[in-house]
Image (cartoon, rainbow over all chains, first blue to last red; front, top):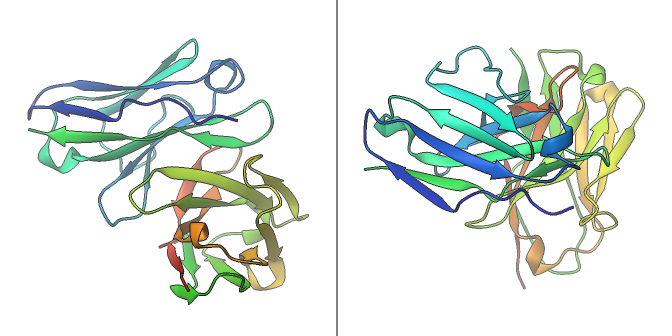
Length: 110
Length: 119
């Protein structure tokens, strides 16, 4: 299985909305409702931000939202804040019964 | 409170064996899958495999199958990741994480265990 494809970096200014993409295939994102997004600050443990494409765990800000269209999932962060600067990883359940991560996107808040 | 507590950092030589652990508490350990995730220095997350403590059903990433062994001792609520012969390329941070109930997401993570393999 190949890693899901994410842009290496994305940047935005405080207050803006930005959207991170995650592209897979019909064997993973396209055929699964189990798409998740994780946030990882440098030196810290990854934190679940979105699961099942668009659900937020309790405690995660409603500025974070997820969606999926075909083989591409997306994470939108609205009202960008300095604390959102981090690496973001998508993951998907696959038709092989395994999980696969994306390569990660580094979000810079200008 | 759900907690996953991993064993500490390790420094090993190439060719040595190693078993690291992940102890769960605050929930019914046997009822939730435990996954392992690798993060090589400066790189992204890589899913290694997952085990169901209830019956030890295990799945591996195709790219890592045969290179590591995932096991569990549900009597002590502990999952393991094991190498029989370490390589320098195994140097990485290793996280265990709990799969959420009924969903394929990793909802709680251990603190990570740093492995350094060097001669």
